[in-house]
Picture (cartoon, rainbow, N blue to C red):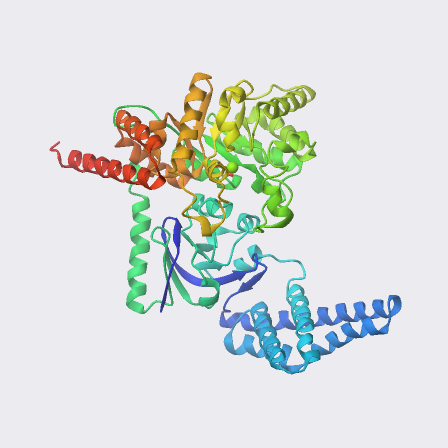
Length: 579
Ligand code: PEP
Ligand code: MG
């Protein structure tokens, strides 16, 4: 039994068999059921045959075009396929250790490279590169139809706990999460899009678990707590029993607030607070209705880009069904908050630059056809329900005016009415010039996830900076207060849709700062409703006044802790009062 510790980022307790995925989910490791061994050996043989054909073709082509010396490199790679230390050994591992073929190849390649590296002979050491090349080709040829993690996971008997180094959102978006009970990541952060997605699906998750992908063997039983960040690998029987009990308790606690579902969110002193839901995957819309949300406050449409759903007809159908399902409640659809290869987890190079580059509303001025296609699809779907269009990554009023002009032009071309247009407030420049933005927007939505990272110059996905990424920083709170005050003065509706809104401890602060509308993961709605029911707005205003004048995030955290304590005491004493 081994214990690991990380950061709980999605509440709940999960117990299951580990499936390990590494290198942006291009490598998957799992243990086979006894009945799956023959099929796996067959896959290995088929991959060997394809690899042999590939290498013969390459070698013949090079012999014709460049020369025999280059061709011989690949002929030699072909000979490696007959080396008993490679495929014969991989086949043996599949039979004896019951591991999947990708993992078997990874292991034999690792062993061969280690042996070669130990050789004194430089020529032999350099062959390590060829061995890796052949191994990579064999692994690709195991999945000739490019069957992805999403396909493979369906073959593995549930319950599965995924253990990943880092899981890109594009992969997470395609997975069938009903087959996965929990997620443990070596790295990651609570506001990465992968974690936002799993939280909204109610899948328990722990990030920052260090070397989990090295320490957990595929097939081992693993248990995790998405609140405390505790992870236990291969628990003893009695410990496992305890975890199963915790899982059952966590599931029943999730139902404890069920009675609040059909009641509007109201503070203790009777102020109505509007709670809407964030949604990433359109098919999950039932969760929004089940949570008793008053609408969709943020649909992150860029997930459609990962699901082959981005052509105009497919988008129109998706939006129509979303709008019709939610009608008469409003649906706020954010246009693609994407640029190039923005989902990559790379932190350097072009992918990193895209995070700060031609992204969100900036694509309009750069004449990105994708924006126009999306607007056409949105406006064509609009009559199915109550649509609002939200524009991401807004910095200036001019940008907003430009985008509005394009939207109005498209509406005229289609002969349809335009719809309310809103701006995300997630760049400090926007938060400081709300009055200018409000001239061109019917509503504003504060994205605290990005607002925090750009205010504090802390990459929200960098787990090394988890402490610096402080939602309670007085600088962030002052920007939020300015936003709320300016929006009220400009008579413009404003809401908060970042992860701060989903935190029952931070919502009182946001109410005190002047916000009355929030949008959050469906799974967070009942907890926030519960927290609001114990809140006195005057108390929240006092708290916010002190918080914006605080000298540090730590000071604000202390204020919040004492407020939470007095709210809890109020709830406890009212529960004790005789009826
Ligand atoms: C935000 O930035 O707070 C937000 C809601 O958008 P996203 O998390 O998709 O960047
Ligand atoms: Mg954002």
